[in-house]
Amino acid sequence: MRRSKSPGIRLSEQDASVVKGMLARGDRQSDIAAFFKVNSGRICEVNTGRTFIAVTPASPDQLPPPGPYEPQTP
Image (tube, rainbow, N blue to C red; front, side):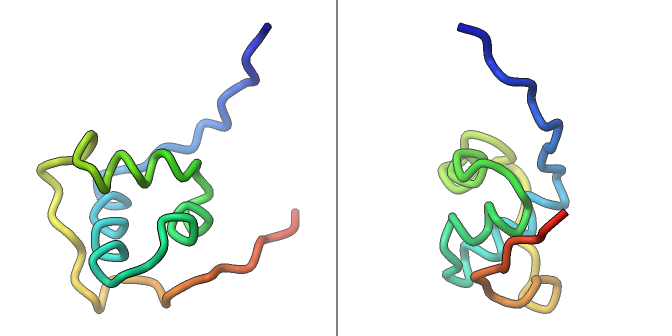
């Protein structure tokens, strides 16, 4: 079985900082994943410290409004 092509969306250190801030605020991982358009597994990796362990959370004034976020149509 062949895997589908990766969409190429990756989280940067700045994104991870915002993710950590959103998690600290209490946002749901699925809402954060929808905001960044990534698989919720990427958010889980940031949350558990598997990736971006040294990145500090963004301050509340640097965060987007809380979700849920509306899906965007192409």
